[in-house]
Amino acid sequence: MKKNILIIGGSSGIGKAIVEQLQDENNVYVANRSSENLDPQKVTYIYYDAIQESLDSSLLPEQLDGFVYCPGSINLRPFRGLKPQAFEDDFKINVIGAIKSLQSVLKNLQQSEQASIVFYSTVAVLTGMPFHTSVATSKGAIEGLTKSLAAEYAPKFRVNAIAPSLTNTPLADKFLNNETKLEKASERHPLKKIGTAKDIAETTCFLLSDKSKWMTGQIIHLDGGIGNLKTN
Image (cartoon, rainbow, N blue to C red; front, side, top):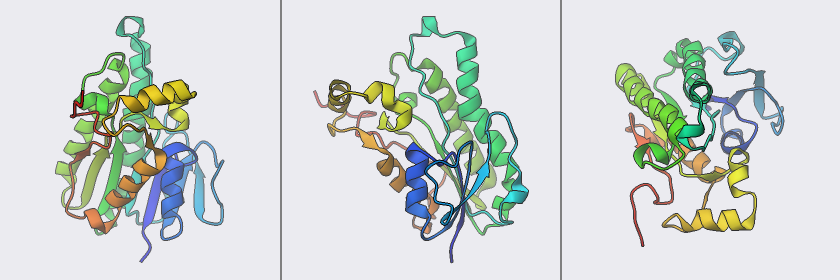
């Protein structure tokens, strides 16, 4: 039986890769500000701004079996140059948007036998890194949200998060937009490579599937080993 999966932000990067992996064998709904890169024959598109609006659950099927929140930010700057507004802006897109979106479809998710919810954190929460104060602050909140929701809604929902290192997506383009930057970033990882949107999407699809049915409240560190290995 096909599952009904809702992807918040699915027209580029990790979201697009998830949609491409799911759309042939599931009923995929993409709530996003743009329908760019989406196949209208394979997915249902819903216009949605996660910061400005509430999601109209009546546009979705009565039952949702999966929920993924993809919008995020990578704001890497020295702490002394970050105004409080920068922290607020990052918190809105990374945390408040996720909360608003999820609350909008709770009733739909509760109709599933066991719904799966997936969020995204960052390796910088586990491993302190310079210039990551804003993004690590908001993604740290996502990890707390993940574990709290997993406890509160077990066994009805499974809630997990993926904590990647820098991944080669449009969001990270300014950090990886030439061969020198890409090579230096790859060398920082024990596996000597940068993750791809497909890498993250494959783990996301695993979390949405019944193959992970005994997994909840977990933060999966998909980071090329940089989070907990030192190789030189």
